[in-house]
Image (spheres, rainbow, N blue to C red):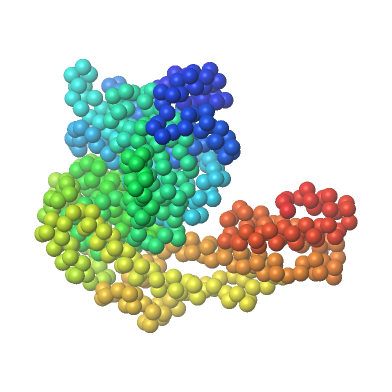
Length: 608
């Protein structure tokens, strides 16, 4: 594999990595400042005042940018990594190389955009961005970063070029990030990739410098992100947003004349376009995704495979899909053997594939969606049928959903008629997506509300929280006890859909999605108990307590209180700021009442 970095003038040579390069860049700065930006030295001063180092702004959004080309001797090769100091293991580079090009059978001429996801190498040191950790707690659970995975956002160009030995120019510009902001990063690539292929490395360096000046990806805040003369306006959702709403439109003001691109979403895909060939079976696919069933999408190109996989993962929102999913998966993937072995049952994963080889390799998988070319908006493909798995022999098989799965719920004919009517009336794909997204949202909420209600009942009563005892434990989740609650407070209260809801819940309670959801809820509730315990402590007259107890017991109390403060800070406990301040005041008062030698020791221990 070739790894050809740039000369010392690249962005990685900036700051401590190369003072000479920094001086050269400062002389050239005006040439790369985006429209509406402050000059670079002003921006860097602002960055320093925020406690940010060079490339911290970039790292908040991206891990690195890669250029993958085709080498006649070596095949796909990483030609450039920006910034140069970015760390990628050989295994990660190999995955990026193979995942950044479509399979040869895809025949993707021109420009193609798609997305992939790959596992981070084990043993890699996780970079800690304390600033970002604060933002993470305000994100919806389905937009939180998965520390074990990277996303790759690809802009691939393949055009005829007689000057090259192969007769084709083939290159990919790839953004590597932890953030699952699919629509956002595809939009960024649309802005910079075509120009990059014409102007090469200096242009890419300038684009990276622009990203380094961006504000951090703070949820709930309207962000203006300039890149190469274009300003993008985005808003990252928060966990407090009402599901199914887009708030960026409401925040658009007529005075925003410098805004070039307004993004109504950072992460959503065109749901109806992806589900269009299979929308009659969308409720069955929702069940398969909800239950974490092994699922393969066989598509003609990486664009179709990645969009469809991402649409499937998105259909159970606001629930997070907790299993692995690969929008584009190849035979060279480091997990290929693990996911295609016949020695054990297929894993809980959604794979998007394009290579005909997979039709044979994954024949034993229980659920396979075979799709044809996704039509442009306005063109409707023929609806595929549910077929038996034995009929799937090659990737040339007719499009269809190949499964023997029997859905638990009856199909919602009303929504199907609404979507079919939209097809006949040539309703725009965006409008159809709104209908389909709302339908999936209502279905997921009807399913999850009874679980939320039952889990809330596991919380101990507030009166059982004593400042002088450890916080009480949550009651255990008992499946049969939960099932009994469904008779009076089940999904029938909010959904018109009939069917075997009990069977669906029983199956879901054994799935990775339930396991992930319940662990998240249990952690949130445990943190709430810790916060309530802290508040109870603050209401006590702790100084009066110390007067009745020994010095040893008082020191022990101070150390425990300090640990409580550290825990609240470390775990971002939902504690009111004045509660923390009260507790610090209590600690200071107790310490000052102790002998001077102890005061000195305790003031140095931990934090107050």
